[in-house]
Image 1 (cartoon, protein in one colour):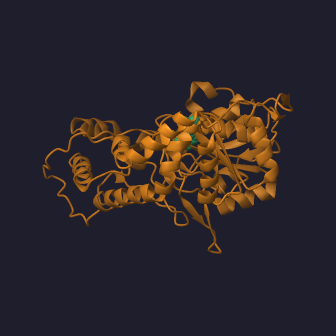
Image 2 (cartoon, protein in one colour):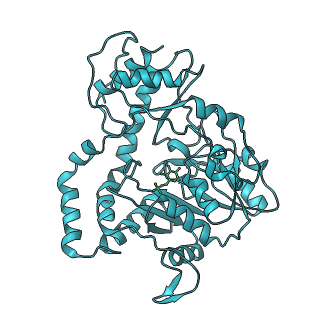
Image 3 (cartoon, protein in one colour):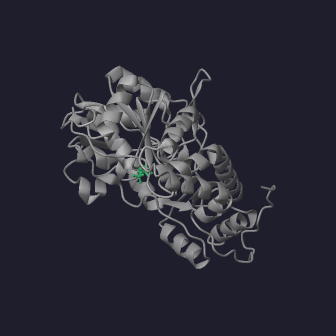
Length: 390
Ligand SMILES: *Cc1c(COP(=O)(O)O)cnc(C)c1O
């Protein structure tokens, strides 16, 4: 992308039509022949379940993440559920999870009759912090689910130290941050999802590494956990028709794996282009009273699954309407705190019905279009449309 010239906030740029939150069609056009051939190859081979494409993706993702074991599965929610099942948690065990996240992170806890303990997050990075978690630990706490929200890592070193101190499992929800890298104090780096005991990710089509349908994966460096995860995901069976534990059925299908095999080598490029779009937004949305651009965690790269602003003064809905009129889509991730969701009444054990940061974020956040296929005219138009509101 060329170095942009600052658009005048009041300037009337010619409208750019067809701006989308995520542009999957343009991304497909750039690799159409390769994807088409890979999908047709699966169809011709008839190896729809656990075919060579799935095995190739598993190995590819192990290499990409630097993880010992990858277990592909049906979707990101299944990944989280299977991870918790494989840890052998007992009903009533408490699992700490941020209140500001997608529902799946907490849903699986409640579904397994474990108890979600919801905690607040950092107002600038939107991520859960060790200090938020520490205050919620009780003798019944068994696990922590740090969510790398919107594409950057939680500050994992203090979270891992806390987990070590209290003997807690750490399951990273890496659905939004695949490709991000965390740097430890000694300079060592690790991909998000490979720092805790288990990492879980999603290949929902609009995720940074998206399939053409549902998909997910679990990764771990522990052989014992990998075996347990594989077993749970495959009906609890160790060999065919012998079922040791109650499991489930969750698989990445071969067609999705074929698509992901085409996209995985491009993932870092996608993340770079998202970062360039975020840099553009950052540069051109500074100095607006009442608008905060997202903060970047100093010890993590950011892969910008979402580019999320905070708008104060109760003006978010008005900005969203203004953008809509200009043909610029936007989304609110997330409008409701998990503790305010009807589904979790009674299951959240810390009796949380208000967390100050989460409460404010739910009222103030708005995410701008973010993907890997922007041209500069579209970004300039989005920025001008935002600026003309203020
Ligand atoms: C998308 C997402 C999930 C769930 O992934 P699915 O594949 O849709 O089941 C879980 N956690 C977070 C934070 C997500 O963004």
